[in-house]
Image 1 (cartoon, rainbow, N blue to C red):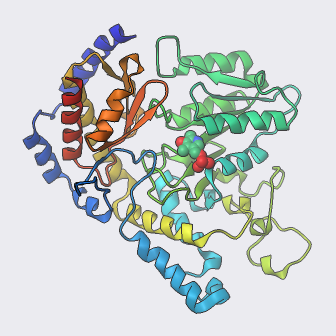
Image 2: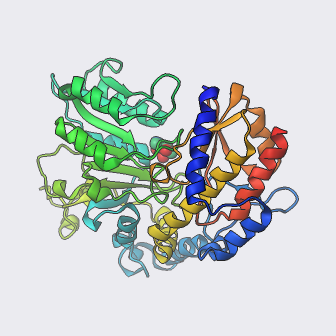
Length: 440
Ligand SMILES: *Cc1c(COP(=O)(O)O)cnc(C)c1O
């Protein structure tokens, strides 16, 4: 496996030389920061500090994004309205709670590339995945399997397995894995095509992590949706690692549904609510199964408290409950920041920042580490997954001691995500300097 990495590094460097504006040295990192028109946004976030009061190098926005400094105000506003208005806050608050989720919709739709009618913030991620499967996993005797990627996030795997069991199917037999080939890390579309050719008419649902949490591979959503649909499958994506990180263009992808969380790249706080996308073509489809509650009911007549159910159109129609406003306030703070900058600008910087990170790591020329994330910037977001030889976790622990916050994922990967919102080129430079010192 590690022999082939030499060839990989060679190919990568050639590519970078073509692009390559990158140079070694701290001066160059500083120059990039100076030229970066988004660099001042770092000040919009609280950067955690180490014991000595120095800012850590935070490369963990793929796990828990940092707190915007404005979040507190947004939450305090709702606490004040609750204190001053009590129940009246639902209609008389500065941002009336009855409509609160609507204040998030447009910005969220822009971030994930969807129409407002296709987007709703509600529940938590795995819960939404289940609710989407209630509607979009409708197995029959002949077509009941679910296809996921081989190294899917465990929660997603557990969720689809339990759906199989819930419908009376065997969760081993009914689960189809899109694995990478032996000795490779990344999944290949050829293999997906082959699986669908062979078993497509037995697969009810294709459910893929839009950006794989482990390798950082950003899949071609449109291609996968097209392929799945060609074989008569429903297609959904878990975009937990995509939202706020890459341009998802969910509407254009043609996917039936997508879900994501807001506590990773969306910087909305631990355990924060999830986003959910349902393609416009399902907006008024009353034939779909769904679990409903009073919040799925027509807004105009919701409070008439009548017996008769009247389905609300669009993604909103999948809501069950009146939502937690305090968590939504944090999401509003964050999505307001996103709307100031725009996902396009963030992605532009992100490509430069991660490209620089990759350049520096490759320049280390060290055979104990290998980047397994795709080298093509179109096939990844900001995360680089660094595979460590002999699964030596000591390297990660030493990085942590040196003030670099990244994460270790079993069996052998350190994930580092320089996020364009608050990470600087100097962060990346200093991280690689520390890595170099530890490796030597
Ligand atoms: C982060 C993440 C989760 C976590 O799910 P929760 O329901 O928010 O705890 C699930 N799936 C994927 C792909 C993730 O990246």
